[in-house]
Structures are given as C-alpha cells and as structure tokens.
Image (cartoon, rainbow, N blue to C red; front, side, top):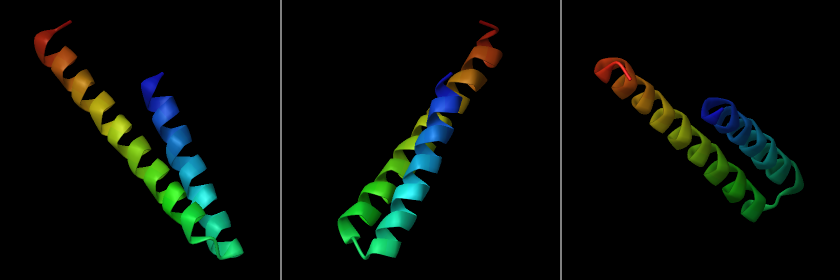
Length: 58
C-alpha cells in the first residue's frame, strides 16, 4: 500500500504544481514540488524495504 500512496502523492503534487503555474502562485508550485519529492522518497523507501525483505527472506 505504501507504493500506491507514494504514487498518489507524486501525481497530486504534479497537479498542484501545474495549477500553481497556471495561476501564477509560487507558493502552490513549491507545495506541489515538495509533495512530489515526499512521494518519491516514500517510494524509494518502500523499494529499499522490499529489497531487504527479499535479501533476508522475510
């Protein structure tokens, strides 16, 4: 479920950033970019945890 949530954050962030650009709202653009980065970090953490589980066979 973590991966799905991470992708949702990335997509939501992309939409928020685009809307901010369209409206000329720099704050909204920053929030969108930040949300995208949090989603990417969450996705990478999930992938790393999966690799550890596979390596330790748990």
